[in-house]
Length: 267
Image (cartoon, rainbow, N blue to C red; front, top):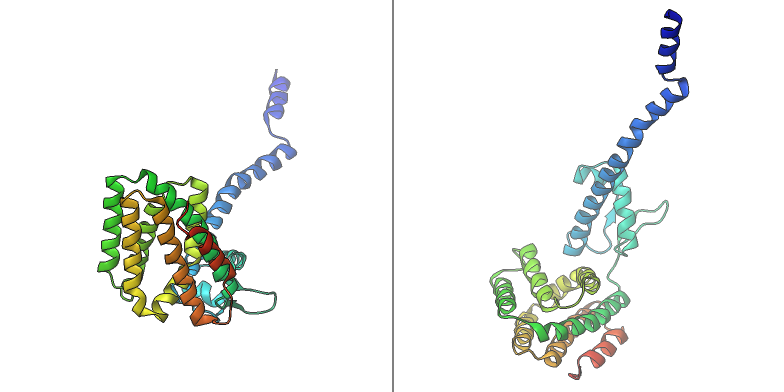
C-alpha cells in the first residue's frame, strides 16, 4: 500500500522537463504584454517628436541626439531608437549609421508631390461631399471656420490647426475610410509647409479665409464642380507660395498638373 502511494506521488510530481516548461511559460505570458507596452511607448515618443518637427519646435537641420532627446522626454533609449526609425521612414529625419540624426530640410520635390496628391484627392472628396451635405454639416463646418478666425495661430497654434483639420475633414467626409486615411496622412505631412506659409506670407491670411468661405458656400449650394475648383486652387496657392520662399527655381509639375485637372470646374 505504501509503495503504491509513493509511486502515485512520484507520478504526480512534475518531471525536470515539465518544470522547465512551466518555468518558461510565465515569460511567454508576460512577454507579449511587455512588448506591446514598449511598442505603445515608442509610438507615443514618435508622436511627440513628430509634433515638435511639424510645429517648427525642431526646425529643419536640427541635430537630434538620442540620449539627449530621451532625457528630455523622460524615456529610455529603446523607444527613442524605434521612434527615430519611424521618423526616418516618414522622411522627417535623416539618420545614418555612425552619424548624428538631423531634421530633414524642406524638400521642394516632397512639397510638390504632397500637394499634387492632396489636390487630386481632396477635389474628389469635396465633390462627393457636396452631393450629400446636410444642414448639420454646414453648422459644424461654419463653427470650425469661426473658431479659426477667432484664434491667433501664433498664440494658439494647436487649437488653430485642430479647427483647420476639422474644417477640411468635414469637407471631405463623403469618401470611404481608406481615402480618408490617405487624405489625413497627406494633410499631416503638409502641416509643416502650412506653418511656413503662415510665417512667410502673413498677408495671405485674408485670402485663405476667403477661400475657406468659398468652399463652405460651394458645399452649402451642393455644387461639386465649384467645390473641387475652390479646394484645388486653395491648396495650389499654398504650395506655390511656399515654393516661392524655399525654392523659387523649382518647377512644381505635380501641383500645376493636378490643378489643371482638378481645378478646371468640370467634374
